[in-house]
Image (tube, rainbow, N blue to C red):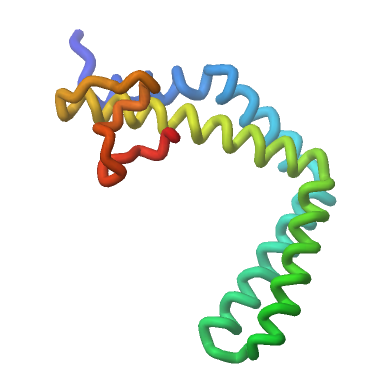
Length: 134
């Protein structure tokens, strides 16, 4: 029986998840998901960041207050970077996203009939068609 395009897409997604980048991100997320401290630290940062952004959008912060809040958020980011579980997950996700963007670039180049450039990203040389592989 001939496979349809949706089945092939699922196979491709499975193949991407089975790469070393896919396995690494899966392992890093598992470790993160099972570490209450890391999850709470990231949740606290996201809640704080969202609250500050809301206050900025509503015009509730002066320039001085924005600088103060920016400094506090920078400190929180520094603390996040010190957490090896969070740091490993962010790094693994970045590597996985690069792989996914590369695959998308190849897919787009194949659809349009363009050749991939020497970087293998499938871009046409113009930023308008960039798939984010650089």
